[in-house]
Amino acid sequence: MESLGDILKKIPSTGIAKDKISTSQEEPSVSPEESCPACRGAGFVHPLLPSGKPDYSRIITCNCAEKVLDDERRKSLKKYSNLGPLSERTFDSFIVPDDDSEAPAHRKIALAVQAARSFADKPSGWLVLLGPSGTGKTHLAAAIANQRISLGYPVFFESASNLLDHLRSSFHPDSEIGHDELFERVKNTPLLILDDLGHHSATSWAREKLDQIINHRFNYALPSVFTSSLSLKDMGERWNMRLSEPRLSSVFILGESYLLQEHGSELELEGLKNMTFDNFQWKRVELPLEARQAIETAYKTARQFADNPEGWLVLEGPHGSGKTHLAAAIANQHIKQGKKPVFKIVPELLDHLRSTFSPDSKVSYDELFEQIKKAQLLILDDLGGHSSTAWAQEKLYQLINYRYNAKLPTVFTTPSRDELEDRICSRLDDHSLNVFTPPLPAPYYQTDYGSGRKTPDSSQIKRGFRHQRE
Image (tube, rainbow, N blue to C red; front, side):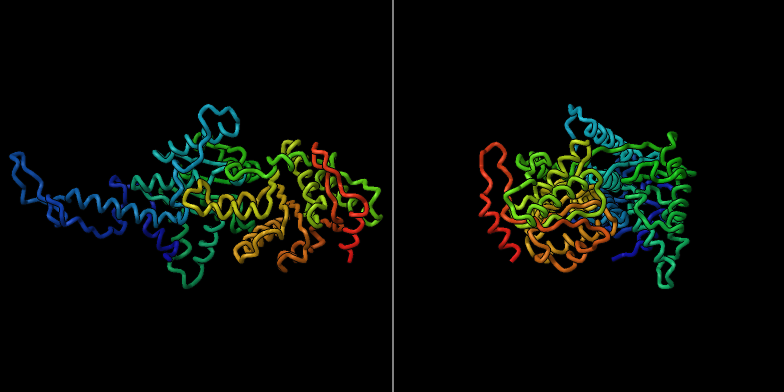
């Protein structure tokens, strides 16, 4: 794989030549079609004199060779852009709301798309795209890059954290490009797209490097695109002043995510939507004392977590014990407060992630996984009830480990922690982060809303609880 240094060596450091590619850039080889009737495979022709006869004193490039040259240039530019898998992101593949939609979030997305298209046609100043994960910021930024490449212009795309890693590695004696040369080329690239600004190392060195890049491009008004899930205020005063400068920068704040909407929401299911704390039956006098205490503790702990979600809440118990009801009640309470929790049944989540690899998928795996991974409140139902393939285990561990390190509020329901992989259990068993409740007894069924279904009698409950303890 070509190093970042080699890539940037072939990107012009200042401006764009009239022929769209700097003359210092390495020219690709030309292989015109030998069947071309004009040049017969030579790749050049003699221009015609006013009389209509060939001017044998001059030669010009044949149209067939020009087409091959343009195709080769675009291939090279795509390689040098550093887009990787994002090279397929275009404006056509972006999900744009209907024009007649009045939803504020839809209007924000439509305006951002319009601005991104205009910027891609004629980059001028800065375009800043802000919003939570999954709102399409990276997709739009990549679409701009791909549009510029299709027109034959150079662009460099990178996430802030990866760029810092490349700069650090350039200090190594074996690096093919020195830090100063690499840094200058990044600062002066004709169009820089810096993705996920603000989610980088918090060291003073990292901040200073990004400050230098932003200040340089600000002072010279170099075309740039920045995306971030942080607000301008959260970025600090210096970046806020630069990124919000009205004479240079256009800022668009995208609303709620469209990615999970594309894959549906489990909370839209009628049963889950109706699960609340008010209709949870936790005062079960017919149960043994230990079972009553377990249910009451789980109920009160879940209510406290819903009021102030911090750390992790683990609800354990066999199917029918009420753990999904409590998890859904937490989510539904947050929705009533205007918040947007992410509730995913684990087997369904894995199916959604797999479906993103389909050629027909309108969203990428990375986009969907990032949104779920960084959700402000994530509820994972039926952990352990999924496929035990190596891929499934790895995806779940990546998701859980990220939220563990970031200490993001999360609710888990599981039939038994004994069925989970050891490395996942190690995260769930951390008492410094997790809130535990006693395992819920079985069978404990909720009333089937309006259907008249009855809960099992006390003898059934006692037998189930006794079996669980054994």
